[in-house]
Length: 341
Ligand code: SAM
Ligand code: SF4
Ligand code: SF4
Image 1 (cartoon, rainbow, N blue to C red):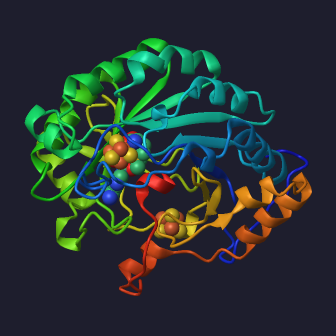
Image 2 (cartoon, rainbow, N blue to C red):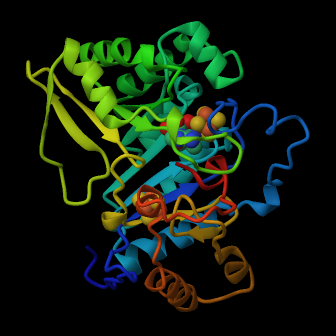
């Protein structure tokens, strides 16, 4: 942690450690669980360019998070982050911030063959590529734009060749892609990439989530164990979100992001910045704190830091824990494509 930074704790004594920045609300895919094509159609009111934080504004805010609050890891996401023009330039600006240890990106991978090299050269360390099936028909139906698996695999290959760390995210939905669990696990075990299974979540208001459509971590482990036994392994660091499991034959690991069956709110240390500069303290929040207006009205760094500190100190979010305890009241939530994963 930076020596000048302030250790700010929220109402549940959780520090602020990671920052996720959504750089755009647009995407070249229409995954059914995230941006269903019927809703995110031709007429959908995506943010106009002037509404987005500029790269200079993003750099200024990121610097504050790093220098004043001790954030060391930044993840770029969206929407599809590579839909925003000149992303290597933004990565270069962020990589130049003293004290940053890790810059990563979550992407659907389609544009990685174009950008992987430039991103790596600019200072990106790792990518997480989302892929829900190796079966072309199923993947085309899930991504809502008829994009082939080979496009994403080419992106993964390009990232690897560029020297970026690569992990794979797979959202599993009952009756949609359970069949793909084993083929995905086998394929990425062979390739040497960590595959992370994500429980389908009730983010946003458009994906028609229900508890019955979730394939839990326990369900997935049962399926994998039949073919390639795994056992739990220690986290890399305290508060790591993904639960790690290693193959008993020693040939790699998988991970689980089990926000529905095993909520991890008690260690959640992530702040999220939306593309138009709102600070969100939970993936399931209804609204964020408008930092853009403060920036554009000429506030000083000190004033901005004070506002960020107040937001974090007041934070008491624990939506997934409340959901598990059946205490989560229905609410209008921000869309995942807007706030970023
Ligand atoms: N477009 C990029 C991508 O797909 O990787 C980045 C943004 S996407 C919103 C970030 C992650 O959230 C992806 O891995 C995606 O699969 C996941 N995601 C989106 N909607 C989800 C949902 N309803 N439940 C669980 N994960 C979801
Ligand atoms: Fe786009 Fe990613 Fe959402 Fe799929 S999950 S629609 S790729 S933002
Ligand atoms: Fe963090 Fe909110 Fe998810 Fe809980 S529900 S882990 S507080 S983002």
